[in-house]
Length: 257
Length: 196
Ligand code: HEM
Ligand code: SF4
Ligand code: SF4
Ligand code: SF4
Image 1 (cartoon, chains in turn cyan, green):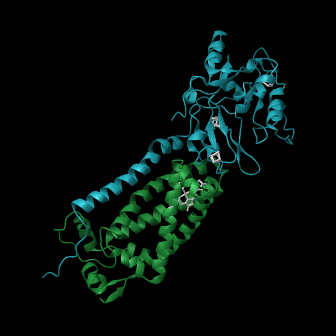
Image 2 (cartoon, protein in one colour):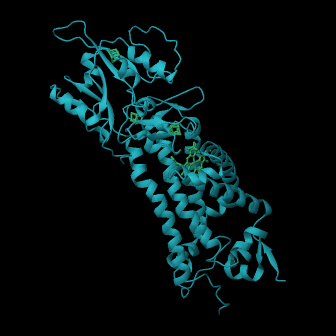
Image 3 (tube, chains in turn cyan, brown):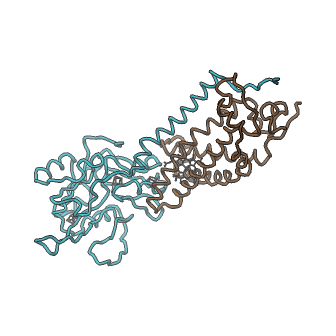
């Protein structure tokens, strides 16, 4: 089901350990993409906005997870579109070009082509796509416009600590492994993600989904039902033609005794 | 001119064409969604408009399908011994030599076909409305998406069979869906139990 295979695939490497929760990445993203501010409520955490939104393509998810040595421990996780190689959103989308793969491997969107059916949000294993006021899809597009012009994404450019790094996907994975990160989340999942995460601890601790998968009904639909509709139609048309030639049309039986 | 008998009322013929027309439009636009057929989308001026066409054709189809119950449901639920025999000889479609039992207004193949269209039609309509209006309920959306497409496979298999049997395979049948009538002589041969 892979939508693309390319060797020049770009990626963002997130190293949550290095993140200080400054949220400069959120601001940079809004600024580049001209996204408006969102009015939010204090709901007992510093996490703000509370969730991804049509005006928040990326966000830092705050989790309080005390450990033995550390009674007050905050974990910061940069959330955004994962730019899956095997992208559920692209697989299910009925409108060609509404979601598309760029040469750099990003999953970008064209709101003019989106028909607002919201199927993609249900096929995304990471609950990423959001809809704007006109019911058109929005999400992180890996700053494909900046990358295309030889720049790096707004968020990685801004990050002061190296928690967000942009580059060739293979190189980023190699470098993170050399630095001793055991788990590169997204290295293999869904054909390989375009947002990869270097963890020393269990990804689960940060609230990452353990085995991300495209919903089985969508996989079934894509692999069996879609081809079946064509094979079924072709099959009966063929069978009718053969019937017509081999057996022929109905003949009224003559009046019999 | 041969003496004619009325087999279908005017409103049945009209409703049949509304049902058939909307269904074919839905199948074509449905295929265009499934396989990203940009040329088909272009005919409608883009996928956004095609989506509206599909959705509103769905409304027409649903109403027409419910209305069709008036014409066919009672017949479609009733089967007799001749009908069972009809299945044993495959309606005479696989060989012209077998003896086909006398039929009423509809043969059991047609009656079953109606029930399949009614059930698959209700499934495709309900799931279609769910995809249209219940966008924010993830599990309903995924279920509806699956049901919509399973029913679609049923449609693209049984509808062409129906079209073939109603045209090429049974010369003269198509005329019933134009005038609502058929020659009395043919009716006596094909539908003896209905004519008597
Ligand atoms: C004979 C009847 C119908 C056929 C053959 C049909 C076929 C299809 C197919 C093949 C798709 C694309 C599936 C996909 O990409 O998931 C689709 C999508 C859809 N259908 Fe239908 N459909 C029928 C009736 C209806 C009805 C009655 C409704 C509701 C009024 C409806 C509403 C939708 C919606 C909302 C979508 C999603 C894409 C969009 O928003 O256009 N359909 N249909
Ligand atoms: S994370 Fe979701 S929206 Fe992003 S590419 Fe994967 S499936 Fe699509
Ligand atoms: S909402 Fe838009 S992008 Fe998402 S599946 Fe529908 S047409 Fe595609
Ligand atoms: S800019 Fe870097 S350090 Fe600051 S919140 Fe974002 S990822 Fe973390």
